Length: 166
Image (tube, rainbow, N blue to C red; front, side, top):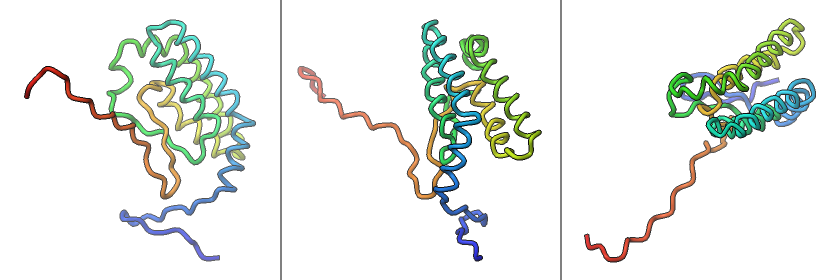
């Protein structure tokens, strides 16, 4: 059987889109990890929203809860914000919810790696550890071939202020 991938500019071959395989992996992930991880992210998000000071981290935790439900076909992309220790409130995120999410990703990643059957789940959990440290730093984009990257909505032009001359 011939390989149907295409060569990109870096000389590597891109994987062809396999929607059935991606759906199967997502369903298996949802059953064995996704639902539980989404609940942990959502609980951490609720606690962070209740603390008000960590509201941005709570909203980011809800965004990541959606990602861990169905991760295959999407990829986390680091944002322009500086690293995890830039904002002191990030330490509060780690104490309130981040350490529990981080520990669960690490434990499940090691568990799935030991089983050798679910090594894709282990890799996915280990890839999510930096997200657990600072969820505000990450956005989620499609990693499917031909998918346009998510761009922020353009702001509507402002009408000129009346009474001022330029």
